[in-house]
Image 1 (cartoon, each protein chain N blue to C red):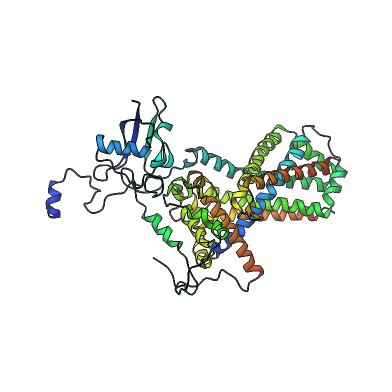
Image 2 (image 1 turned 45 degrees about the horizontal axis):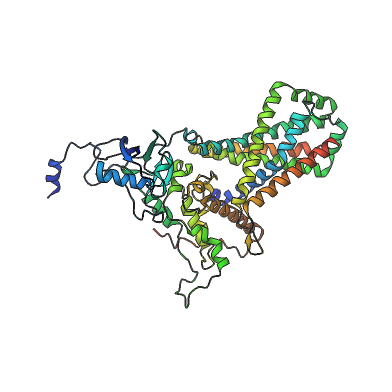
Length: 148
Length: 117
Length: 258
């Protein structure tokens, strides 16, 4: 049967359809793709934590500047730290920075090539636990250095 | 072509920054910006802090902490803008703002720790 | 006999401008998987339903679809997991691929990307080997996990970067490149590196990790990509510190492999 005959017998066809190549449907990815799934949202929050890392650095640069300038400047900075604005910023930053730490150490074992010890691969849990342990030790050292 | 082969460099900085930020920032933040202002711990004296900050090893630590963390932010934020907000067409602008910001912060940090004598 | 309602995204290029949902009521048998339900629909309710399937045992990779928003192999997804009083199962074609008809996706883009990474053993001199290559179990272990990939493209449906960047090579392709890079018999890492160490290659990945979560064969493509990034960074550093004897010399454009 020739193509011409087929065409006259065909039902009403949408204009975008041709007999030889059907129109594929391509869905546009929404700007809010990251809200569509729990895993995506967690990922975007993890990435946003980097903003609060930067916020911490900015605050610390101000702290160092104040410390460098003298006791009065430092006292002024301490006073600012006690304001509600500063406390809100810092508490939110802390939440995100801790989220960064936890997600970072949890995926670290996946990101490094398997380490072999006596022919057996080191389990991921061990690597993650070591990182968290190091975190605790380092935090303790900082606290001790500053508060002694 | 040059950008592609240099991506490894930015990723390395991002990774180093990520490790440094993960290890050191939570304790530092909790201590200096929450516990001390809220009076949960005894406030360290100005002299003690100044003495600590003037030690070369501490100055190096503070510089690396600030600089690497900023490069960590620059890389991650750059990709967040590409993917999250689908702003890939503003490629050059985003790159310059992110890494430029990190470089600026690094310079400021260097200047500050250099002057702690 | 329990029944469950399936909401299936239908698309006929002759009639439709965009997909629409059609519902079908299917009996629930204890051992039935979603694929069984689809076959029931095609046999008894609506013969026009189009979808791919083959081995029905999770090894061919043909029957991947979105089931309630999750990429799944329909031959490995039990209906009873969804049949809780009044619940519906929504079945859609795999995300981030063009749809040809109903649940059938256009995968030639994936095939092109797969071929681009040269997923075969590359030997330097290209001559036929005189005898078989010997490999110890430890050497096999280095790449075995990545060799389990069945090309089902569930990871492509899970990866947001695949959806956002048409040129991104994607999780399975990079995992398969690593399968060969880590194979002791292969000598083609440099050539694959020249193709993959680009923003559309490994650097496009932001380690979302969804690909590893949905992989039915536990290949861990996310891990493969990150390990590749680490290796590429070490090589890049070496090329600076020890510029002689680099592994990553670009071998020109002799092998574009279209």
